[in-house]
Image (cartoon, rainbow, N blue to C red; front, side):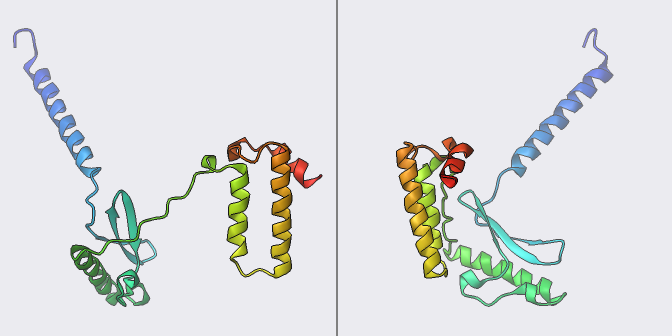
Length: 174
């Protein structure tokens, strides 16, 4: 302690201890407890249950996925709050019995698509929708022309991010 001011040393040690406590709290706050449902309320007064599972957050406003008819947001307060607590309890019981949410679909990122794949994917999605037959035939013909254009330009198997606006203009105005 020779040469040190005891007050400064005590202050320094106190600040170190406080920063250590803050660091510990920060680390513990970032840990997500999986499969532990919590009830939350939006500013508009609607309730939902959320929990984490395999790194994803799941939110449910009713118990339809569990086969139960619990819809708290269709009621007025105070019944809404009571029914929301029942919703949370229902999820807790179902999770404890082994129920798990469906896996989320993993979508490709834009840079993982090739230029030829993206047009085909859009066509497949539109073909399933309730459009007229002439419109679907137009889409089919346009897809065929687009694929031919891409193959002639040697772009069909290139990543989507390499598609330049000039090539789109060239296709449209040719």
